[in-house]
Image (tube, rainbow, N blue to C red; front, side, top):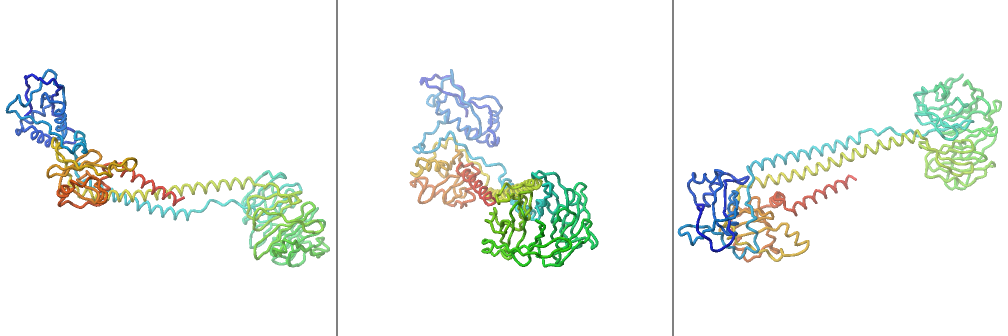
Length: 635
């Protein structure tokens, strides 16, 4: 029973304390169990008397205790889930057991010789099993199913996103240049399949006309200035005529037709100082001279190449030959139209070595002739220059292998562009390369398309990474919850027994020498270190948190490297490298008789549930490693 006040004097002069209790129960403690343990501790069997101590009034349970004994009683009270208080016993001298015959006083037990390598008994906390352990297992199972379902959904979305990325049409392609022509004023007109791009003699943009504005339905293919206001446009069509006469200022085009209907031609050139046009119809093998109204003035059947080119210079009509690397020279007067005067062979040494046997295009710039020679079988091409006597000059170095090349005389300069390009390379008449002429309208569209593609790639890539990460992490989380379900399903939800003062009698196993290492290895070992003790028929386990549990036989789960009782787990090491000295291990083995076998999943779950630092670090490293691997695969 709690002590009654004493009036006997103390002769020791040591500081003493009173143990005071006002009925306060610690959070998480069952009130009925706390009252039962209180009666057991103070040997009170009457429930009515026990209830008086929980009325809320402060009652002195023990009076005049020495400091060590007072601390022991304080710990005992907390061990059974009750909060007591220590007050200095000022003016109340303690009463010793010798001065009170017949009165039993519980003194703190003496520490055993193993206490020096055991835990501090005053800091230990009994393991309190979470409420409704079976409910925890059920919740873990539900979370596992939800996580694995999420992972499966993420994988399905990932495949759907990949399919969508393949089915999405790309942004509109940047229109490529297909033709160019300059007039006597130095103005430059460029054509894509859909646009006419008007520029002044400096290359600055003057305006843009779309094919639909001009009333044309087929893509634009070739251009020829008739004068400063009108343009002859060839369109890509396989039916009917393909030539249209357009007035730029009015944005209006009409079919170029005459007495033989709507004209069709593959090449065209304007006759100087007049309105006549020379047309090359390679499909029918004829040259025609047509007036401004579209009527035939003269014509002649001749052999023409598949892609004819026409130029007029110094009163002569030049055309690329169908027979080989040569230019055919004709007259273009009405009376002697298309009479051939000469055949000029173009045989530069480099062209002969590369077997460039056809003239793709040619032009006169300043005092020099330029020609593009090609090998139709290999697709190899080269640009060559000639003087007025058709002597070969050093070839022009091209920046890179190019497809079909078009030569456009522009005053005293030459524009060279590969068909399908977005810029034109400028050259002086002597072959000196200048800066590229970039078409601002096409450059802006190329920038927009590049940004759209980049944005699409970023969005799709980010979505793929997020979905892949989600699927991987959800899978890991589902496996983790499934492991928790297995472990919780086997737990019995048993609280640790209240050892109270008996904790002083626990015989603690001494750590092996492998646990005394210093440095990083010693720190790693210390992170998972616990304590194992023997208390009569009980095996006492204390984990890294200072939480203890006790039991034996079937209550203990044994892993090759761990011992576990409910949520308290202690590493034991391996047979070759034990973490505890083997002198008392036979006693431990006797208490493990009939124990259940623990698996690795239970070990991992217990370590993570107990917030074991090394386990948390390994889990974080695993998540980071998987995330980095996913990012690396998606890069």
